[in-house]
Amino acid sequence: MESFVLIKQVPDQSSKAGINSDGTIDRAKAKRMLNPFDRYALEAALQTKRQHGARVTAITMGPPPAMEILYEAIAHGADRGILMTDRRLAASDTLATAYTLAQTVRYAGSPDLIFCGLQTTDGDTAQVGPQLAERLGIPQVTYCEAFEIRDGILLARRAIEGGSQTVTVSLPALVTVANSAQRLAYQTLRGARRVQHLMRDEAARAEVIQIINLDDVGADPERCGLKGSPTIVAATEKVGEIGGNCQVFQGQSVPSLVKSLREAASISSYIGAG
Amino acid sequence: MVQKRVLIFAEQVNGELQPIGLELLGSGRLLADKLGATLSALVLGSNIAHLSSTLIGHGADEVFLADHPELAQYRTLPYRRVITDLIKSWPQPPHIILLGSTTTGRDLAPRLAAYLETGLTADCTELDIGPFEYSNSKDPSKSGLFPNCLYAIRPSFGESLKARILGPWKNPQMATVRPGVMVPLAWNGSRRGEVFQVPVQLDPSDLSLQIVETVRNLSQAIDLTRAEVIVSGGYGLGSPEGFELMEQLAACFPNSAVGSSRKAVDSGWIPYAHQVGQTGKTVRPQIYIACGISGAIQHRVGMDKSQTIIAINKDSSAPIFKFAHYGIVGDLYQVVPEMIRQLQQGQPQPQASPSERIPVLQGQ
Image (cartoon, rainbow over all chains, first blue to last red; front, side, top):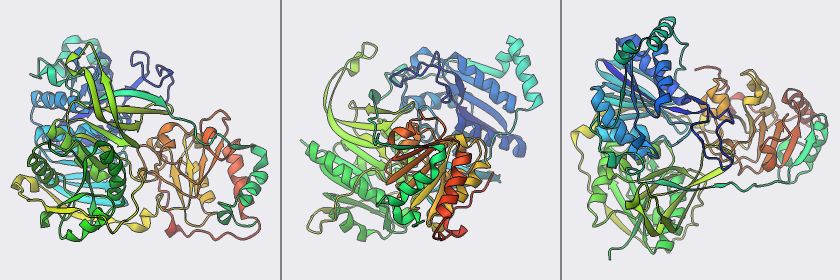
């Protein structure tokens, strides 16, 4: 069984480094991390390895430092990694990204299951997974919270508004994993040692992690990056402050706060007369 | 000159229209009027003929009904097939297609956009029509002045930012729209519109996914969207135990629920169902009490329509104090217990029974 997991390196939102005053990101300066949603996707892929002996391939598209998250995936137990990196990929929107990833997936093999995080924290669209599934012509299960595989059929529970839905689907299929799914466990000692070895031994690294570009996967550069993207971010603007007339109390004046709430006509009925 | 079309996808569940469809009609009507376009509603399901009058009364000029037993419940591939077949049957694609940013819309819209090889903007909070002039030396083929672009506006990564996304080079220009943001038109029974039956021709491969069971637990769904008072905890709680205190504060109010920021969810302190904000739920309670939440845009867009916002944070420069109505600067572990004492003084508050609120379960 072959499981692919698609992961992305994103700016670390908890750090102010590399965030320009206009809110755009200087990716060269920003601290980087594995997209938090992808941790759930990686855990799901590793579940297929534990339960069905699947080979797990982690795939990422990004600039060369994205290698770091392939090492991270291997330290958690992924078997191999693929880094799709090419300057012509700059400014890809989700359509162009999905095209590039579809070419990369086809190049890398015939997966039974492809796992993606529900969305990334930088793009925040949740579009690439379904767009990739469309390009590959396979069914998808989005918002997946839990799953098992029985006799080549995926049985999955997905989150929907106000509840959940259980579906069965034949493989191959693509799954986007919600952050209500199983959390990623710690790195394994074996995985961490393997990464140390790969970092020291270039020949061993090249066997486990492939670094490829658009030409390797036969992608049409006109359909990638800026040229292949039907949308652009035309402008960003600061959100105007609303309110701005906050009544501020200091910590020790809780009684006066509650008193003010009781006197506020619009909400007093919720507070009780006191 | 073929008539331009703005197409909205109206979701139904068990033959009932979901609110998002009427919200999209409200927004779509403004766009269509600016464009001089027809506003079309598309609904898929089984035995749904009765829905067309509602859609017309709320602003649709025409309704496309795809009525077939296999379409009773939403499934990606059959819906994708029927909609793309319909669009291909028209002399030109719609100028704009809007779907809701629901679990259904976010499952379906990217499949449609990838099939149609067109742009899609996720989870918009504002839409407009306007001109756009583009020049880029790296991609000169796209340069030009474009009238009548869809301005798809969404909160974006970073602090207090909105991004305007445009894709005028190819129609349809597509967007998913956040539920609860757009305002439906008032019902008007005198509106007239045309109703068309959409042919349904599925391929056996479209049926590879079967729905075993769908559970919509409405007592759970009171959760955040129907609670009148929401007590939300953020990363400032410092630990998952902080949510017990949030529960106690929520219990001081009838019809209350506990919410959280994304960071608290991502830290594993509370399940995703409680998340308010850009990647969680949009809420509009009467009272929203934010404890240890800084108020970054990602959270703010999910709650800033609340009637009264009360912020508790020890950092007086936290952005939340810019838009809260009441703020208290202090350690929430001292402030909240005191608040509970104050609220419980005097008239005994009706304690919300556990069944009225989502229990906060640690772990999954």
